Structures are given as C-alpha cells and as structure tokens.
Amino acid sequence: MQVQGLEDVVAAESSICFIDGDKGILSYRGIDIHELARKSTFEEVCFLLWEGRLPAREELAATQREIGAERAIPGEILSFLASLARTAAPMEALRTAVSALSAADPDGADMSPAANRRKARRLTGQIGTVVAAYERLRRGQAVVPPDPGRSHADDILRMLGGQTAPSSAVRALDIALILHADHELNASTFAARVTAATLSDMHSAVTSAIGTLKGPLHGGANEAVLQMLREIGSLDRVDADIRARLARKERIMGFGHRVYSTEDPRATHLREMSRQVAESSATTLWYDMSQRIEQIVNAEKKLNANVDFYSASLYFMLGIPPDLFTPLFAVSRISGWTAHVLEQYAHNRLIRPRAEYTGPSYPQPYVPMDAR
Ligand code: ACO
Image (tube, rainbow, N blue to C red):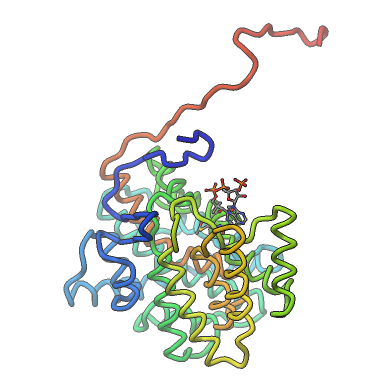
C-alpha cells in the first residue's frame, strides 16, 4: 500500500456504488451501469442513489416533479451570479453560488434526515439552473426560467440554448448524467464526506466537493481534453503531437485511472455516443482525433480512456462550451455527493486520519528572534 494519495485505502463503508477496477464493473446499488445507461433516466438514478432501490412508477413521477420544482433559484442568487459574470469562470461561479444558496435555503440549518433529503433534491435541481443561467448571463442573454414539467436533461439544454433541444441531444445528455452520477470514494465525494463528517451542513459539503472536482486531475480533465484536441487541430497532426507530449512526460488528459486497470465502463458509452453524434454532425474530426489519440496512448502507455476523454468531444459536438464541461459533471455528480452525505450523516464518525511525520526530529529548540 502506498501512503501518498491513499491508494487502495478503504476509508468508508458504503452501500451506494460498487466498482471492480480489474473487471471494469461499475454499479449503483448493485445495478450495472451498462443497464442503467440503456434503460434508466437521471431522475430514476437520483432516487436509486438516495433511497437505495429503484422507484415505483409513482415515486419516479414524484421525484421528477420535485427535482423540476426545485430548479427554480431565488432572484437574489441570479443577481449575485450576474455580478460575477464578467470575471468568474463557470466552475468558480457554481462553487460560489452553492455556498450562497445555503443562506437562501428554506430548510435553513435544519439537519433532520427529512430536511437533508429535501436539500439533496433541491441542490440537484438548482445546480442545473445555476450552470445554465450563468452561461446566459455571461453571454449577455436573458436567463431562461426553468420548466418544471420537463426532464432535467431536457430543461438544462433548453435553459442553455433558449429553445427545446433535439430529442437525440436530450437523450445523450441524460445518459451522460447517468454515467457521471456516482463513483464511490472519488476525490470530490471523499471531500464531501470529510466535510459532512464534522456535522457541517450539506451546502458546505457540496461546496467542498465542487472545489475538489474542479482540478484537472479529477473533473477538470474533460475541459483539458478539449483544449488538447483544439491545440492539435487536425487528424494528421495527432501522431506527432501525442508522441511529443509523451516524450516530454506530459500527462495526456482523459487517460488513466486510480481504480480501473481495464476500460472505464463509462468510457465505453461515451465513445459510442461521441461516434453517433459525430456521424450526424457536419464533421467527424473531434471523434476521429479522439480515436487516434486513444490508439496511440493505449499502445505507448497501456493507459485506457477514462470518463473525461470522450465526454469532451461529445459535449463539444452538442454545442456546449468547453468551460461548462466540468460544471455539467457537477450537475450530475450532485446526486452522488448528496447520497454520500446522507449516508455519512446516518452512520457518522469524524474522518480524521494521521500523517507520517517527516519533519525535523523532536525536540527542536525554539530559537529567540535575535538569535536566528
Ligand atoms: N498520461 C500519461 N501518463 C500517465 C497518465 C496520463 N494520463 N496517467 C498516469 N500516467 C502514468 C504516470 O506518469 C505514472 O508513470 P510513472 O510510473 O512512469 O511515473 C503512472 O502512469 C502512474 O500514474 P499515477 O499518477 O501514480 O497514477 P494515479 O493513480 O495517481 O493517477 C490519475 C490517476 C490522476 C487519474 C492519472 O491517471 C492522471 O493524471 N490522468 C490524467 C488526468 C485525468 O484524466 N483525470 C481524470 C480522472 S477520472 C475522474 O477523476 C473523473
């Protein structure tokens, strides 16, 4: 076991997400991700993560209604977002908005299980609207209010683009939301659980998680993948560029994973969706470049694409701006973060590990200022 990075350390008991990294298995509450991606919806997955089982028909309808109703965000938060719009990147705005939303939450400081379940649903609804509204504000466009009758994926695309998106784009986003919803003790979920374990509130836990997701070694990698694709720019430049990056010992964003030694099962779907969207688009360039990069990195480094690799070309071809890729990850992962926070509260113990001390030997003298 390696101390640095807590590799393979089991730091919590959880009944939410099962991963077998050698076999490439990912499941939510025991249900295989491939089956969920084919048959489920984001709202159904939210219920599954929060409640531990699939909803009955009425329960699913209620979850859709509740998340839809919670997409509305207070006017003061919209004004606050408008005040950030000239300077803050979307991920900064999202992190700041979630922190601010705690002050406007109708459940306030109530830490009862029922209030925390409501906060989970509310944050899930609100985060989608924050991302879409902020994008409109920074483009100088009118904010599109949520339509509670629509599915989350449908309404987010409509609030972003100002009109109903094609059903193929809605289903592609819905599947992407399902695939990103939870992933055991990934860095941002761990951050959320550490915060929750001090018995701090759900908004604080989610704010910690968003700050953690933002980094390029975690959720920020999807935006970095698109930046790399744009830098390379054409299919004929891929080989030389990627080989040069590898020779410089640079990390190729969207490859490698702490847990999977085989294909990340989420990448299987995202690759296929990227291919399908490319084939119905004006150009297949972004998919073709991605595929060639994958072949080279597989061959040269034996590294597999992770969830962030093909989501980049997919989102870009769906017309989503690159700096919204990581916020969209949060739009989905809020379901997993809040499920883990609820689980942490239900079986709480403070998370407080130790460090292997490597500093000056004890005891050292306290040298007076004049003698230093
Ligand atoms: N490109 C090139 N080499 C890599 C990559 C990569 N993407 N990933 C790992 N390696 C190499 C490392 O250089 C190292 O090689 P070395 O032993 O010769 O020094 C070896 O593989 C092991 O790498 P570690 O950093 O020890 O692996 P770790 O488990 O700590 O890292 C991580 C996992 C952070 C995901 C890493 O693979 C990486 O940086 N990938 C690129 C960023 C990325 O895509 N992040 C998203 C992950 S998925 C998610 O969080 C949603």
